[in-house]
Image (cartoon, rainbow, N blue to C red; front, side, top):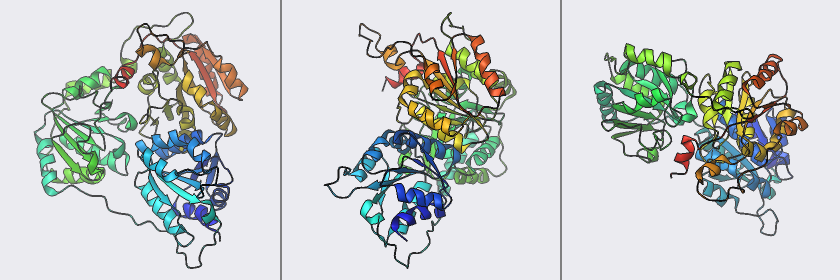
Length: 542
């Protein structure tokens, strides 16, 4: 067996079931070996789109996902998506061919580029080490890292030694805080009158949601999440949804009135804590994280605990003994949460005109039409708060939020990956006109896959972040555009399409949903855009 064939087979034996990419000469053989072993390969139209698809799939499935790339230019085409994944600790394994001679047109220092993005790097060093090298790369990815596995072209053509052993990843027990640290945590939990838990990306690990809910029930804590974990506690009576810029006025009030905030696998950064505005003057702050370097990295904390989220929560619940507290869970708070938590329950004045629809009206109306089982993916831009706030999701695997790098243009491809990871849910993508057009090549992929993907394009004919930030006498012609008929373009790709200017235009969305569609619907929504969003102000403030 050649090394190139062993790579594909080994990936499948380790547990990889889905790979995305664009196939060139350098990754042709190991990609085919992967599919021959039983894996699924999804061909994208561009490596950048493939990277975002793989990122979205990994986030919404919890599986290590492979991105297969050609050497050199195929690799560099993917880098924005890989950077987003690396910043988000996505379990993404980038398997890329590598040119090793400087005489090759494809030669670049791929390992150095990966390290600059924040990804881990592994190289297939030889035929003798090939299986071990692939296994090591998979092990690192399974720990919640983005890993670039470089596969030299010349090594691919070597024959595997006869004495190669089957790949095997040894599970490592997650750390648990010391008894002394647990005692400090329990002391804070049993003396707090208004505790709030904020669960982040790290709390999406196995068993963590249940363990946190059980500990919150014992201590009377309200349950919130960071944006990337939106929906995690949706079915819990004491959930207050997202902490941060997407917080409803009620959620922001309850969090800022807390006397104890515990971040579980959550950075408690400027987005989640609104630059610290959600932390009251008398609040104690605790952070629990599997990465010791994360403790106190973004803000001062009163207590930091290094440990797995489920393991730490279980240990704290045990240490409580028979103690059970009311905490923040009073009948008054329960009624306020029941009647005033959702953004769709917060009153506002409709800003629609004869030719443009208020994006809040647009999104809330679509929310009422969609089935409960949905997976929502959101691009970056001035518009992003509307789908993030006004579209409900069923759980933490219903909201794919790729904003760690704040790159515009990843949303459509991300939604395709999320759709494949959650095939029983209706996929929804929220994009701006600029972001949609940046990633439009993957509309062809969505049509080819027969995805019933609802793409909501918030089309204000501008890059809203720049338009609303540069409000002086600056020339804005560089960031404003003539109206683009996105509905016509989408139809040319083979999609259903719809132009929306008024609320009544949205009736066609319900008709499409009722028809059990097998191709995307692109909604070209001509939206009012009178001001910069709250999140835009914060983005330009750092």
